[in-house]
Image (cartoon, rainbow, N blue to C red; front, side):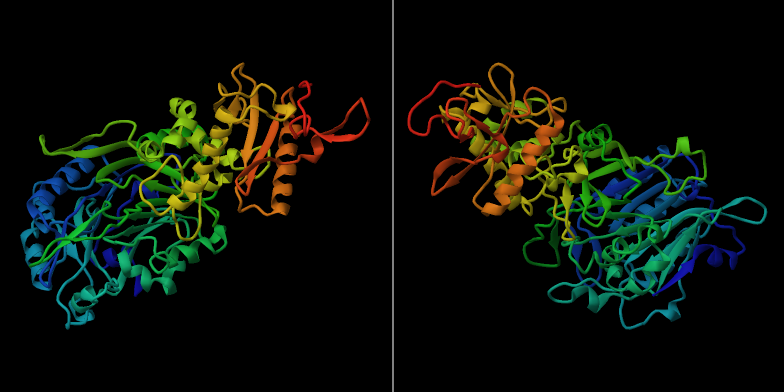
Length: 585
């Protein structure tokens, strides 16, 4: 596998490479259009691609028309999707990229003879380039192509449409090594460079990721890596190894966007015979951004969330924006990685979703979908009536980020810093190298459900005690069955309001907390409220269970001298320990 500069390739043809908008280091955002199609797929020794070629052709044609109409500067379809007949008809009818645009079109498999026929069919409209056949081993038949479609410039300044066909270089892994037995491997990865030389872009095809390690350093600096896939396990460590390397290298040397585009979830595979094979896969299409090139502010995150683009922060100090798993066409505006412009116009917000289109079978077109996009959280919570009852007031606020915050706070799983509520600091909004999304307000698969169950268990315990406990420690006087779980930014360190509106913090620590951890969290939570100040800074109660019995955790900082006998009395205990005394507040 080698990196081939597109400029060098075109120069041999007497052509100048395109001046692509998304590689211009200025303040202008560019439009990206990404298609995430649904299955089923078809796979046999003759063809890999959509099972319903007629429907795929229609969807693909409408996508290309949309890319042209929306002046998409970057348009992408995933591996093995676009029928060659659709691409042929689009080229011959003028549905092609503008001079500043690149279309990366993952296309269904093709043979050498099939590609030669395609070249003849479009010869009057398009120059088709690819690496020499003699450089490819002849003992396999099927090519897995990405067609890089763009406008080059002739010496007379007229444009020349170019279809640069890149072949997958390494086969995917499956139980029968099906693709390995068929794949005719390419050897080249094509790299586009911006006119100023500051920015670049390259495409890799699915399991190219297995072999890209030696050249990844040539692709991940000031660049956009477009990773198209048809992948049942897109977050597997082998497929994401190049990301592990990139994210584990000095961020100044790996300042890049990585755009992973897969098919939609729940793909089924059909062949010549037998029933469909369900993959039960996630989609995991994701746009990865550098640490300083994506906003975690509520305003940006919430707008994207409503349209099906979900924020997470990686422990590798990058941002990962996960797309909704259903079939859709996503339209985004994205700022450049580098902007040689006034600092005041430097946009560090990252990609923003403009529209999410779904296929309308009646009109045979991609139309704007409903807003907000169902994120799965309502169904998940509804399946747990106790959690739903506990979160009634939080859910009514229609703020998905409030759910993450109130649940983290209720479980005591926060940093303790004044800005603990920042999304990149909340554990449910962070992802490990396994890239499992554990957010409570985004439930697209079951991979994070163990975490989610532990998290909602804390809030259901709190809600249960509010409804049933009649004696509370004096510092949280006023709690009764009419108190409710709530969260707001104005009172961000509290999770419960009494019936008179007094904010209170009640935390439930489950039995996974050893004594030293209980003590540490107790001190941390008390300090959080103390530093924030205000008349309610002592309204803290920490509860847990021991052998099924409710316990109020001692909070040493809330001890006081009883004026009657000057002895130390822990005021988190219900007074008195044996008989009832008046509540002193």
